[in-house]
Image 1 (tube, rainbow, N blue to C red):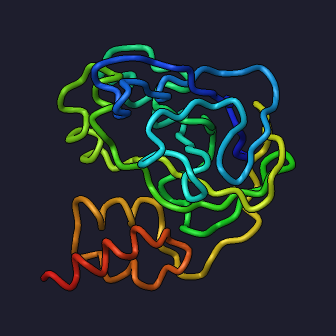
Image 2: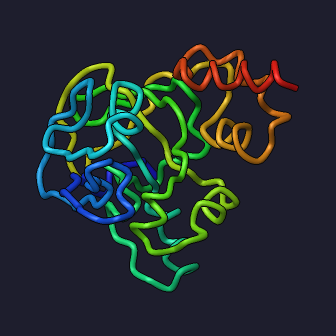
Length: 212
């Protein structure tokens, strides 16, 4: 089955004590929109981002999470988790996000995107859901979703097909990067051969390997 965008979601301003921004505002609460949105190198037009020190920017212009993985969490927690509840801009269907190779390119609508890195769960995410041990549980589940950079600006809308148009040969996936940096440090050396990884992650890997 061809992968597609199940929903496009934009963040609204949420003010709460758990918000990561010093002002107490977060954009993690994202809501589905009906039509296409314009994506640029620095993010999605109309999307609110509270703490730009750790969210947004070229290497995290969009965040994608799979509808299938959201379904597992809905069952696990016994609650409804609709599009945007993971703070994702793109809710995908029939797209293997965990197996996506770092650096692979996706054609969606008129935009060209590139897979960059997995999501790292944070206290804002746990606070938004009201699940104190969510970071531990999300890490153990190891289905983090994927951040994307914009190689060509364009419009993306609900129902658009997700076409993989290029895939690097190194084979290092979103899931492998997530496990290497959290659960399985023995995988860290593999990440040194992935030039498409953001420099911040490459620096972190080099420091951790040097400290062994």
